[in-house]
Length: 232
Ligand SMILES: NC(=O)c1ccc[n+]([C@@H]2O[C@H](COP(=O)([O-])OP(=O)(O)OC[C@H]3O[C@@H](n4cnc5c(N)ncnc54)[C@H](OP(=O)(O)O)[C@@H]3O)[C@@H](O)[C@H]2O)c1
Image (tube, rainbow, N blue to C red; front, side):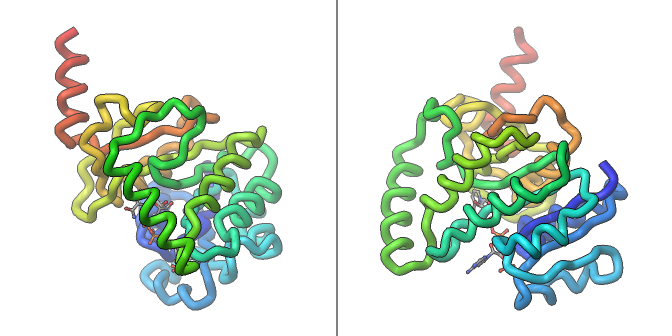
């Protein structure tokens, strides 16, 4: 991994990913909306910024050229299929063989075998309906984006984030294939560590064609799982 593109670099997750990527010595190209370029000022002399809508094929084509990896923040904002357009542009235009890592939430399922807590089901139903009604966001857009990724024969990973919180890094999150697995019960990850998992995934071949659901490595459910494994 030498050069990486971060699509959605100006958001909270994106900026953490920029920092982790620079820490690893990668050359970084960031894509963000024109009005958000200022949010990347702290990195101005260390990264290349390509301003523009992330679902614009010409913008993505320019940004991903020569990149060995692409990290993409899929956010469901608006009702214009922004996530789907963004994912499709990355799938279509990334260099052949590039590692593609996408972010989303636990509500995305790859094989339908996730078992969701009632609270999450209720949140998705209520927030999803209200958001669509007010044209604020469309959760189905992220679902469609991920459906296309799962069908793609590119070298993708879809990282599914739990509830997020700010704070110092606790270390690389742990993961499981299915929401409902006991290791994930705590449903909490530091945003900085979500970003760490995304960047680490670029060089982790075991995660190709996986949709890991992640949780903080120091949460009670992760610690209980580690203690159990050590006792065996
Ligand atoms: N928030 C949570 O609790 C949570 C939980 C689980 C998973 N996740 C996942 O984590 C990732 C990052 O989420 P986050 O909540 O931490 O947000 P974030 O990092 O701040 O990212 C939000 C992204 O959406 C863009 N955006 C904001 N408003 C937009 C609009 N109206 N049209 C188009 N783009 C817009 C932002 O770009 P600008 O900088 O240009 O505004 C930014 O790239 C997402 O994939 C999300 O599904 C979040």
